Amino acid sequence: MKPNIVIVMTDQQRHDLRKAAGYPLDTMPFLDSFAEKGVDFSQAYTPNPTCMPARVSMFTGRYCHTDGIRSIQRDNHLPQGTPNLLSFLKDKGYETAYFGHNHVFKNLLTGQNKKGESESDYHSFSDGPLAE
Image 1 (cartoon, helix red, strand yellow):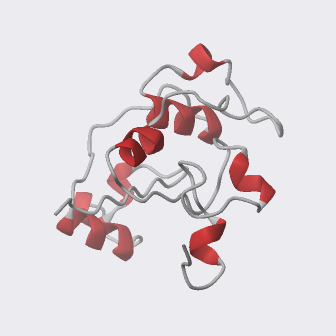
Image 2 (cartoon, one colour):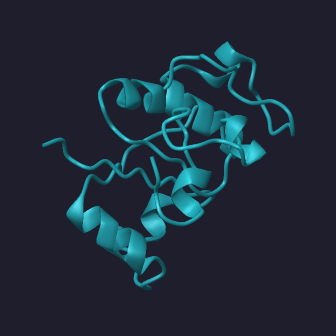
Image 3 (cartoon, helix red, strand yellow):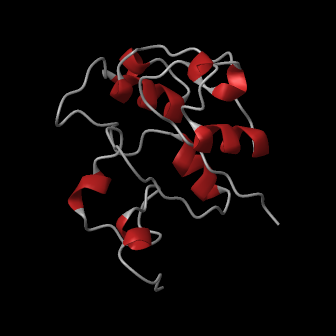
């Protein structure tokens, strides 16, 4: 059986502002709980301080400027068919979905995708029971 993979990517806070990292206040108890039960990247660096280019880099493994994404632009998404983490996992038999702030995959914005239709099924998971 394949292990479940959940990636939680948050915006604009420093790693050391969590109690688990030594900060005196309990500011992010849910993130600390995830870190206790999974992998905590305490020394990770971003290729871009802006969320959209950083997400593109994380999902492709390449510098964001390689795909021409250097800032947040409304219609600037990862080109369809670009190799990425979700398509890789889908090819390996995983059922994939992307929830939350999306600046990476254009097909998430249409509301038309169905389960299994693309690497980033969102609406099929969020609109009620899963149906084949």
